Image (cartoon, rainbow, N blue to C red; front, side):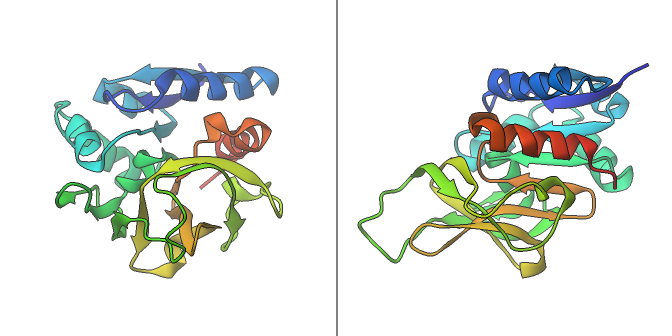
Length: 215
């Protein structure tokens, strides 16, 4: 029986693009994995790895998760207690923080202490949202980021960013009139602010490394 990668469907995120990226890596590398897109918390219990995509406002995304009966409990059980490898993408990464400050204050999953705050570049000529290709620089080694080279560019679209209370949880940064948190993580969980599924070969390589990461 194949292990499964569960991409959570909670009404937010470009699920088709995300699932296509994972399916391409699995097919190209002939990996014995099934890619499942599901809103059923029971599928988290059966999965070997969990992916939480996300697009839109923090509060809306958190509300979408909360409205699925049993989803938050299943996430906490499988990620915190069972320590399954977890990847958060864009707002899916932001939800890992304690709270989001977009359109008010909203509680997050509180897996990594910190707030999600509006990007405020020192150079006021820089437009918000931070959108397009930007370099991601690894600041703390991590297996899932092992293939990111100097000057490797990824695709970003966001107006808010994670500020971690403990800088040890920051794994990569980008520069946009100041440092932008590009990846966070601890233990069995990692989140990336950019979109691997829109980042061409660099993004697919990151997906591949996540699928091979052993915790």
